[in-house]
Image (cartoon, rainbow, N blue to C red; front, side):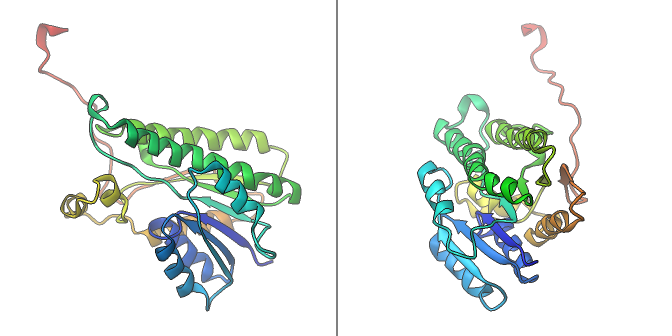
Length: 256
């Protein structure tokens, strides 16, 4: 049976790559993102491979998310796979210097936006007794680093929320997976660094990061497994990435 896939944040990065991967299998696609011009270009490039319904959407707008789902056109309303990809990091400042607006934007997008879309799509999956929710997390949920404060916290929520969904859905065939990509060359760093292209490029200097296509292949794989198999969490890094040693400060002396 041909599947219908809903992907948030589908105008670039992991979202666009997931759209291309599912399009290669002839799936019907529901694509949403804030940047309509970019989204339209993605949809146009895929229209010869599959049916595509693109629509501008800001997942931080609760009413807009509800209306988006309620008004899906005929033939696109029964979502088989939801890829909650819309998300971002903003800033690298320590917590005592961080911009509260940045924190709130991350919470509104990474946490509330994901919850809103899940709440709108999940009842249909339960009623039809089929479906798979894939939430895009981050190793920042597991391994803190300086400047990860609100971003890491938001992705820790994604992981625990996904676990809670699994608990709620026990006894149904609906699956839930969290994919946690590490260093990946997308627009992520450019957004995080507020458009500083030089600093964003430096993030990837002398590395071989994951590509968006790598992550899309993983998302496709977990949703293509036999229906009795649920991958709960998958943390993925390029081989050039690992964990730092435990941090020890030697400057405080007798101050503490």
